[in-house]
Length: 345
Image 1 (cartoon, rainbow, N blue to C red):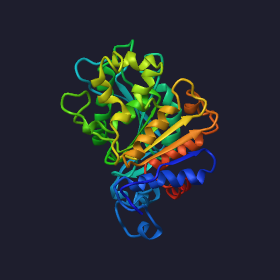
Image 2 (image 1 turned 30 degrees about the vertical axis):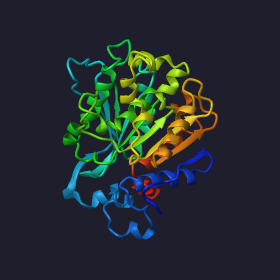
Image 3 (image 1 turned 135 degrees about the horizontal axis):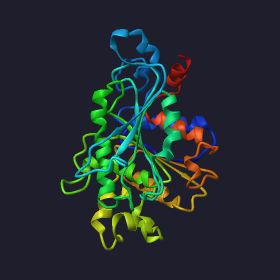
Image 4 (image 1 turned 90 degrees about the horizontal axis):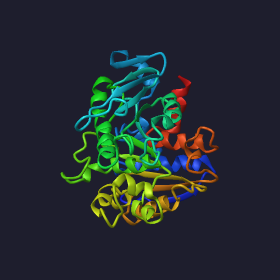
């Protein structure tokens, strides 16, 4: 198989097996290696997804245990910001799974909430995802940031998200059980734009907001994201104009710096999930973005959730919710077999 290019699969939520296979393939392609086969899984290759330690393996090596919790743990942490911050908004909730864990044995998922980059909605929107993902054995970092009408907007919203992400390195010093070398960031709506931007900050120049990241997510899942910001702004999305402080014609440099479709990194696996009934952020955003990924010979997947709208896509009541959790779980580097081992212990 040609590892320099992976065909982009367009599908709807139907057979879970097909979805799991597709996202696992993305995980295998992250390092540019051949997708895992039965023989490579047992070869001892450290880049192979199946070699990631499970809880049962951790228990056998008591001397290497760095964390032991009877229940999942949630801690609110404050991250430092550029200039004077706001302790009521510059924070993140860190969720750590129950069990005994060795160093670098737990995958980390960073969650970035949406809400039109505005103050009406906060990180609580992603709490259900955080709680269910930590129950699946992952570490989860659900971040809050300053938004429009609460001290945010350009450039503060973006520098806050960058600061929150960079603080992962400090958190890892306190909690060495979770990994930070090949991690996943998941965002909804405006948070999906921020998530895609977070994955490409390493390409920013020194005069751009968020440059020189200390922590770099290398996989991204977008939930209903405005991934083509110029297209969205030119089709009536004044929320983008408000957060960036102008139209694409007025401030093209800002759009160029943070617009996901203008900053595609072909080496970063991405999954764009969008509800077919979304009238707030048109599914065309995800379609156009994945088309651009394909043109760049990138690694991507477009998933259309039949019947979901913009809000229901992040609701635990969505009929697709468990399948989205499976996509996030697989994209984090865990296989279905590893999850079975985790649950059985």
